[in-house]
Amino acid sequence: MSIRIGILGYGNLGRGVECAVEANPDMELVAVFTRRDPASVKIWSQGVPVVSVKDVADWQDKIDVMILCGGSATDLPKQTPEYVKYFNVIDSFDTHARIPEHFADVDKAAKESGHLGIISVGWDPGLFSLARVYSNAILPDGKDYTFWGKGVSQGHSDAIRRIKGVKDAKQYTVPVESALEAVRSGSNPELTTREKHTRECFVVLEDGADAAYVENAIKTMPNYFDEYDTTVHFISEEELQRDHSGLAHGGFVIRSGATGHEKEHKHIIEFSLKLDSNPEFTTSVLVAYARAAYRLAKEGQTGCRTVLDIAPAYLCAQSGEELRAHLL
Ligand code: NDP
Image 1 (cartoon, rainbow, N blue to C red):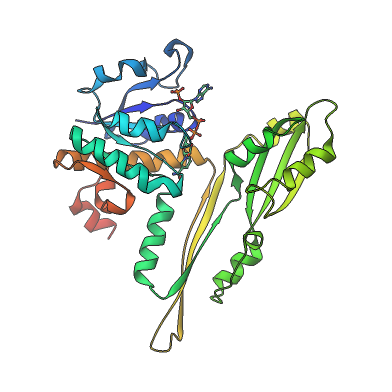
Image 2 (image 1 turned 180 degrees about the vertical axis):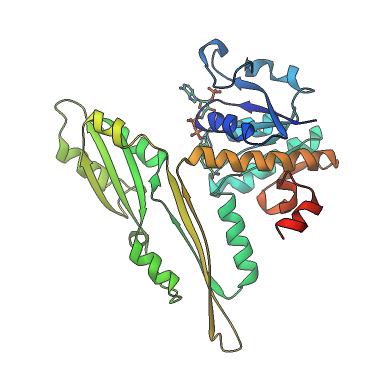
């Protein structure tokens, strides 16, 4: 019998889960849940119902794992502890500083209801977290570096759109190549925020807006841009649509360490991702962890987990025997 998947929230990730489930023959998509009027939400999958979240409790016996696709800022802190009361759940919560708090909320609700929740699944947090943990365990004497990009930062693009006179905008985070090379050389450089990444902005102005004002407002924006070297390009709406509507992203996690009695031997562990579609890749990770949630719940496990708690074999459709024969 296939693993019955539900999607809660139909944005970029919701659409990505549809593709990812299709790519995994041991899974089937059962329903999509939304806070909007279901009649207004057109989904890609044929024959799959779109249901109001108000009716979600009626689906408890029909779904093995609910993949929560809400936003990290305000949706998931409420949705994950709420829906783990009814289902085993997976989320992609990515507000790193608030993960311990979110874990505690989900753990309590999951234990009370007898379900399993895996939080902060994706690539960062997610696969990058695994890379950091493996390499720290293996090279206790060393230094960690994470670089993001080149890719679109939704938060920074939104921040630009809130400036007076801006009609639309896209912001790319770009790793500085010379900094990457310095890290790869094993010299363990101390890098400032400015030395690691630059920010590149493509901005469409409202008619009659003051370009100099907008450029200055971007470059001096505290927390978002003031600590970076930022380039601002003013372009037309057509150019933004044509050249900047993609959702590519990626990055590098590097640990540079040393072994030997005199720390004379240097080692570099590097894990990198180059993603054509951030949401399609993120949801490919989410469904692999949905398989793990399904299996762990079948074993009777309850409570909250992160990617750090899940053994790799639980992610794969193949049996242990097949994995040992081909992937070990
Ligand atoms: P979206 O903004 O596309 O969707 C978020 C929610 O907004 C949806 O669940 C949906 O809920 C609602 N929504 C979507 N489209 C519309 C619309 N047209 N009108 C009204 N409401 C809409 O976010 P993403 O899917 O791109 O990302 C979700 C989260 O995933 C991000 O906040 C990010 O933190 C996280 N993420 C984590 C990653 C990781 O590596 N851990 C990587 C990438 C993302 P509803 O259907 O109920 O209205």
